[in-house]
Length: 344
Image (cartoon, rainbow, N blue to C red; front, side, top):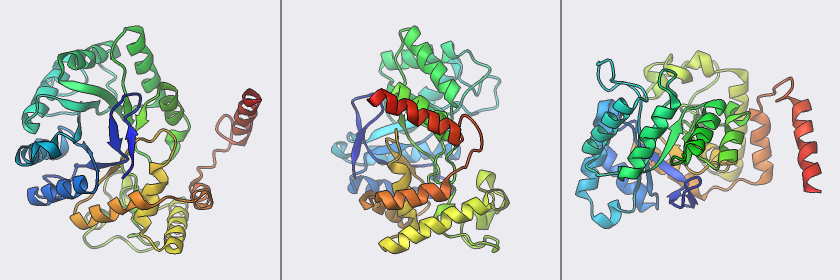
């Protein structure tokens, strides 16, 4: 396992992060604790959850694991959670208001059995709450010692940049991270969000790095999903639905991942994770596993370092091929010429 600083902070985290969205729903408590044990034994020290994962059960399961393990193990864990989405049916039971975030964070701390968390992330943008109010609340949490750092999740480029500049202008604590969807299948964040994160010094924490399971190679062309898989249970599930994601571009990406994996003698999962983990601005890639077997396959990605040739093959297969300015060839050519001019 490698370690990287969490954005502009001085805290080091493993370059693979244990995501816990399955805890309490697809993974029972014994299985969840086994995953946590195996993850830290492999050198992982970064664990990510949220108040809405399994209706709070994920945080409760993690809290009981923290309480049951030696302090030298649990003190080494860098713990992240999130707030924003509905946790009750009241009018103020969601959003990024001072009121909701204060109540949401306190509830998360109770479930986790902690006085503080290392990273508190707002789960998505809230168009109804002034950003100044949200930033003041987050700064107050830092000053009170309830959180050490804060970050964002699912923000667009302009939302991220506005928040960073507002925090600086208001002399408030600055964010350190952004948690976006990012994989070989989903590369649109490279147009605006990655440059914004690099400009602000934020570390990216990609979620769904396997494209909802597509990059594991378990789905086939012209063969509807079956069996004990996410799409086997429901092929219309969310953003990774079979008909929505099963495009020609996706199959070309899967073919390229399979080629690289077969040539290396490793699993497709490890190739896909190694690609995203070593993209610009990425601090730690979030793993999502239902079983200990899946987790062990994911963890093996820590030992995979792609060559320039392998990376180029995957980049080419997953290229989004924007056709016009500023993201198409003309825009990139102008950018590269400007960069070359600065370097001389």
